[in-house]
Length: 43
Image (cartoon, rainbow, N blue to C red):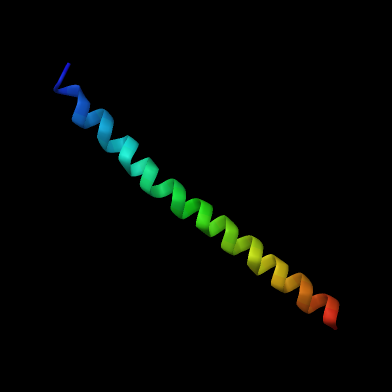
């Protein structure tokens, strides 16, 4: 069973690294959309 741990840990750790980056991109996208809406309202 010990041999399986590294394999199970690999993809999991990669997902944990990817998820935060996805969340950051979503927040950046939301901010970007907010800026676009503000610019459109100013016109």
